[in-house]
Length: 472
Image (cartoon, rainbow, N blue to C red; front, side, top):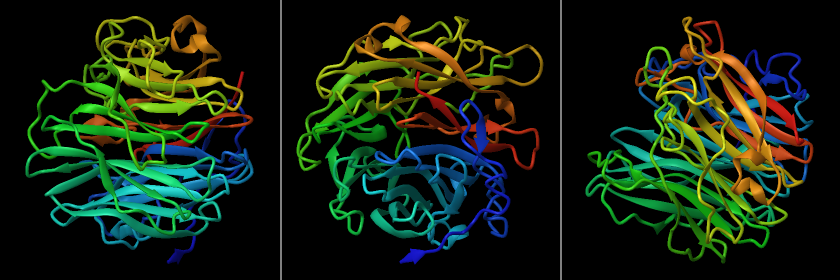
């Protein structure tokens, strides 16, 4: 079924362009203003995912959660904004037939992801659930940059709370317009076991193969979080994830090892290697510096990017062991398709501070431009002052060449956005929440970042912004 565009009232804001170095608001008033769901918090946007077209630098898409509940997940739906002219104008519409607010059967949704294929087809995926009924991963496709959507197709649908499907991502194959790949974590409550699930389409999203587990951690309670696939220049797939304690289907087990790992496939996802461990790690748990209250930005989700010219791989994550602040950005690189990885290095330039101080860095993303420039974005509190509030800035590091994976001094930093007061953000479990990740992508002209920045108005606490940063 094809569903027409629903334009968001009042958004995107007039005059939105993608001027280099300027942030532009791409979200606006909620499209679900008339929805009767009293658990949603209107005009709250979270966790953007950004995709750029591999062959058309004018096309960019950003997906986010809209109208989140204070207890978790979005009660409104998933909204996707697209531009076909490099950011001079944006169009936004919700994914259809998802939540009850968007004409679907589910009470909440979360974790959107989007990806452009080489023919211009836009794929989207999201988690959806109704507690006590069902938990699902849903896929969509659009051939007109989000003006209309076909779907959803349920990649999996399980009874809840017996199962929990979480944190999907989708990757269009940049070499083949007929192929796309989806991965997510599936938890089983009966024995507190988790599986890394995989599905693919070979006909451009018209149909999807039956989902199957391609890896299952040996220990009860160990989940795979932040699953994401990249495609190497020769067509091989590399899938990154964090493996560790993931207590969504049973009791917590903090003694489980915490590891950043990858799987590899040389046949388009038919078979997969055993996991390769990039590093063992410890979660960073950022705190508001002056009051020592939590910020909901735990380093649970790694990010991965590939240099499409050379096949070099880069992975980043939030780490508690690399700085005295107990919240820093780790990076490792691979130059042989993910078989071996460089030792982790700390790449952020946040100042040294005591644990929980102004030197905390968090929410990293990584991408590689067409000319081989590697970019890493992250947030920190370096400009915080003792006055009320927690000024927060977003920074971009760039590097080019073999030293990027081994020499922190090879990276150059520039300011990307902020400061904004993260204490003004809407909350999840009582803590300010922007999402477990933000968005980063590239075109031939440089990088695009999708960020959550807060406002001074309580009835519109935060918006999704896009900023364009030319490659150095």
